[in-house]
Length: 309
Image (cartoon, rainbow, N blue to C red):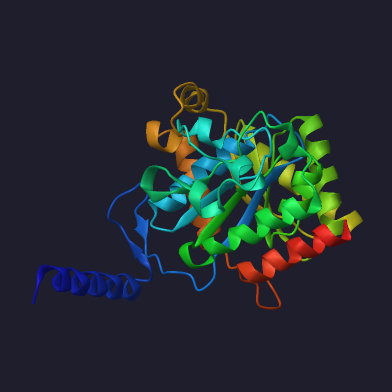
């Protein structure tokens, strides 16, 4: 038996042992690594916010990276068209970005950049005002090109633009799962609820997770969720789940300055531990749908939205 075959047998035996232990193997990481099973279909999760400056992109980058560290095949797609900064937060300088796809110079597969822990990044590019006002057929082309990731991903995390502009509506609101990021400030809460109303009007079947960022403690975050959930139940007849809260932490600003995700630069910080919990809860949360919902179905919904709009 050659060494490669022996390694394959060892991997299979390890996986069996993990499953026998209930799906957890305490072997490292922030709180131990979970058993990772390759998904039949990737989960597409859009991360969005009602206004800018609430930490949406930072959360997208760090939770996607943490999922990759946990062993999930993860793709981070920056669709903040014209103002993308995911590559900056990761300290990357991609040669190509979505503008090359839009203008027909490259395919989506050719612009993918590999980041830490095997994380795949699709950079949006910045400074291209044309990207913020794409025609319908160009948007459809971007969506169609994403299909190549279906066989190579467990998670596709979509970092959208903020607000209710075209980029948010046409990319994020067709996703089966949406992470809505807010802070406790009144303006952020008002804009988050406004976006929730838009989500409800366009994509009632989406499962919306709430993440409250930059809070003093869990009680403050729970109060934010309780108030928003009560308003959603009363006026929209829907619920939003509470996914996570993230504390104010100097590790975040330090990581931004040094262009290194805080889960790498400060893995033991309070905010990194919070993101670890967020990633684990997200990974353990089944996608609540009533019909098949692979990436192909999600893409079809996006295209349908494009046609209606």
